Image (tube, rainbow, N blue to C red; front, side, top):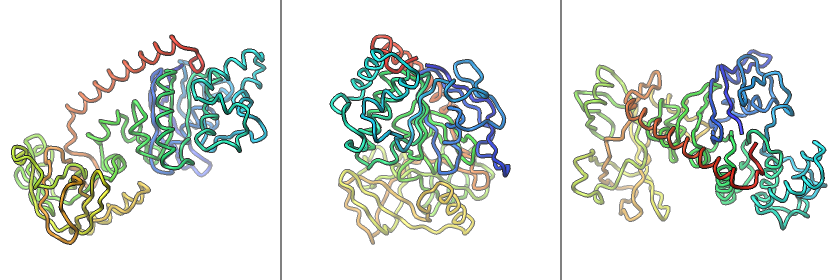
Length: 421
């Protein structure tokens, strides 16, 4: 396995458009890094520059301590798994997996050993004699992964490998990819536009926007401490609610009533005019179901519920509100950039499935005001991002990542070397 360092990477096409704009990112040996963002943000272009399928306009790509800008893809010893599987329909599963070894003129005995080792890892033994047309989508994806494993590459690169699968199969394959990466302990870079994959697979996640890095952090830190409106709106499902607000003393005035802030948050937003309050749907609760000891820790308000959606284990309530035209336009532009449903002037509230709140009626909600974020509408900056807590989370994530990498190396050293360099 090898580390991957990107130093001020820029990719410009003939029209001068920077698809990737001054990206610097360090990926440690054995780390699982996710590149995520909406369509056109530059994530696939960046992955293709790592493997050598796209030329680098400026900057340095360093793999395993060696600058590889001028090296051809075959000289970089990387394995890439594509969105469309790229299997040969006339070859059996065995020969599809063995294909890169045949090109390298590896002896037959060694080919058989490596293919069988990969088939053990991916549970493909009973399918080795079949053709791709006789396999399911998930099995085809595993064959493509097997072909990557047998190369004994320095790193795995995945370009939206699950986007062609149905929802149930995507969940199964996410688990398989995660298990495989941890078993082999190999450096992995995974491109996706699906934030669920990003949050469940990676040690760290790099959020890209228009070719630039917005934030690189653990999934937990991205969720709890987003650096700006873009990251806050992209991470989370349903997305974060954004409400217009003004500050008076230590209270935010919002369409749902006042929200009291602690001293730190008050100091961060003091002296500003119009603000945007970010509240995740799960920070709300049905006030009638909240423990009395917990009530003073948040804010309670009444609102009319427009629509409810009962999902079995939970339910969502939709609450419309009024907002200035400038805020409405900004939310519309943000949702368009995120490739998401329009962020309308309505709050989505996640409540317990046992709640008796009904649509078309007034209801009382409780909000955990300790978790709200406050953003500058002009710059998008998260004004209340807790720098001290963020630093602590980063330290914890780094320590966890080091432990995970060391565990992966130990497991790889103690098992067959089907995928580690």
